[in-house]
Amino acid sequence: MSTIDWHPEDPATLADPYPVFARMRDEDPCFWSPRLKSWVLTRYDDVKAVCLDKERLSSDRLRPFFASLPPPEAERIGQIIRYLSQWMVFNDPPDHTRLRRLTSRVFHAKSMQAMRPQVADIADWLMDGIGSRTEFDFITDFAGPLPCLVIMALLGVERQELARVKRMSDDMALFIGSSRTSPEKYDTAEAATHEMAGFFRELIEDRRRTPRADLMSELVHLRDDDGDRLTEDELVATCILLLFAGHETTTNHIANGMLALMRFPDQMARLQAEPALANAAVEELLRYDGPSGAQVRIVSQTHELHGKTLEAGQRVFIMLNAANRDPRAYPDPDRVDLDRDGPPHLSFGFGIHICLGFPLARTEGQVAFPALLKRYRAIEPMTTSPAWINSLVFRGMTSLPVRVRHA
Image (tube, rainbow, N blue to C red):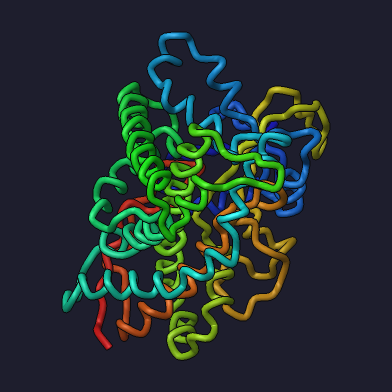
């Protein structure tokens, strides 16, 4: 019987989950959480193995949940069911294979890396908007709008739609990223999904009539070698996924990374003096406190792990950030070290479900951190206790007040 009493929603645990993760890794690496009614894995090798296991574990975790809902409740979130069921992240092969194959024909590393000049332009535009202020909220004024504007630019959505797009995405996060605690959250997320679907349907129809040089036009007119294409609902679902996933997680990546640099000022000073370290810095910051706390799988075949029986139908939380701090994989893992060497971090997942947009997230960090450290001679936190999002899926803050000195 485990002696670990894990309260993932406790504010102190949200702020620093790593001590309890260390206990899990050492004392109970296949931990049964009575609160989550799920298994929790925290070691690097175990998390990576689950990411690669297509036989015994499934990513198709929403359909069983939706199927378990009473009909009135399922009807209440009909739009969420309609579109999220078609997200590739919630599908197994062959459906996942098909969706990923089609989408990756236009959303690939080359197209994302080509966004670097626009990322730089958006970062400068946001800092110009901050102007001469010496105090501001880093998330509200920079880390929040930057990735949203980048994805909007990629899809061909006008900048003036930022506030609306951000609101819809934030409202959807109530369903996707937080625990089910109130009917109001369902209603808000359902309304946002309905609104975002309508928003993208209009844009899709516009691109069908008048193609432009943007990714949405490419998706609309996409055909593979066999003539296969995305259905109308798949197009809408893919646009929602690209916007939502590319915005929420990258906001956390940039904000968590800046907080980590502020807490390790020697490493911040190194990056400021040597902007060429940006690539290494991004990988280390993603490892140290990545933007996604966990991914979820469903056991499809009963099997044993660390002396425990994982039964078909049970849920498994693979704790990505816990794995990234495993001393079995990384020496002195609780430090930020821009010279770190070691295995690839698991912040984007691994295997067939590795985040489709990870090259874009990397590019945004590689541009944003040096740009900030060039514009500001010093960046310091205005609080030692920022407020963290109450979520297992997302690892991020609601605000990050900072004080800067201009260069």
